[in-house]
Length: 263
Ligand code: NAD
Image (cartoon, rainbow, N blue to C red):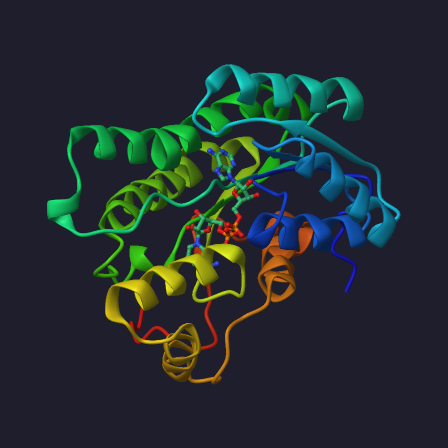
């Protein structure tokens, strides 16, 4: 199936590794021009070079922090200057710290709001003028299975990502008449540094070994294994593409069947 991504200009946030890189790789392989961003130099530029080598695509990279509006605007401006406009955006950032209610003061709540929810608002705001000028576009927010089934140790993520999901749904209604689709992409347990870090924390808290934690977690997935970033990336590429032209306001779960919710 031709996804219709050839020549499209796609921005992917938090894409030096992990889920963002997985999506960037798939859209690049489908022929899109890709603009990736993440906080750490030179890593983001090295990731861009790897993407070019893997896909032959035109790739640009910017250092940015999802909590800093000026750096989001700068990334947007660089992309528009080099690619002439924006057709797609993946809203993504690092996850807020793990913990339960008693672990967090106002500063922690404010930090999670800025990293996860306010950053989503700002990224969407920054690309809308270009998408409107082009007469359409596709936005994908990356959240978590916690938006359907809250995870005990990830309170900040549970609360802020529910806000992002609601933002995506609300925007999908407002922007559909303008040809801009907004969908939410939910990772279950995908094999990235973030997942490994969370399992390492759990290992330290419980005294169980990393391998024991990892095996027990994988056993909760009906498919019996964690997902790979490329498997997640293919779902992202689909939602960004014309193949999903009549899909908006949806939440697509990529979790090997782990969630038990019917909706
Ligand atoms: P990862 O640790 O592999 O990669 C995180 C990426 O985010 C990196 O590119 C990093 O540079 C970037 N980043 C970190 N802080 C940032 C900031 N302030 N501004 C912009 N970019 C920033 O993590 P991942 O697994 O790719 O996770 C991506 C998102 O998906 C995270 O929010 C994570 O919590 C969430 N998530 C992941 C899983 C999973 O199984 N991997 C499951 C549920 C939710």
